[in-house]
Image (cartoon, one colour):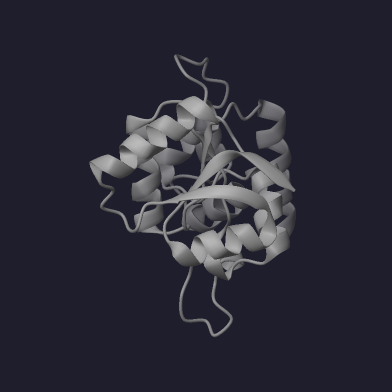
Length: 184
């Protein structure tokens, strides 16, 4: 599998895992304190070939993703759930621990956020009705929904935003909620 875009990852071990799974070039952020030089490289990569942000499903990974999205408009996003990134010994989490097939699957399901004002097709009321916010099991349901829709883990506020910017349709949302309900 050849990837045209340059994949932004957190470190060397992530690069090794990506290159093991697909043919691609990477830029490493080397942690969540992204330097101005790294942002410049990512901007240049976005102009030349496009960029896919593929960070760990944890707080530092989400922070890196947000910083890049703020400075580099139009980047694409690939996501893996926590359970697919846990080290074999159970001590550690990251893209570097993911199976090659899971990496390829995440890269097949890349999302490009829409730019500009999008119509709200899935409302906060829909999220409440689906028990994704305001309920005891909301966090677990949101995490599983993020896996099903390939939009990553989110808190309640971010879920609504991601559904909007990744243009998740009412049908996709309804199918994922039905699957959640069947799994419970």
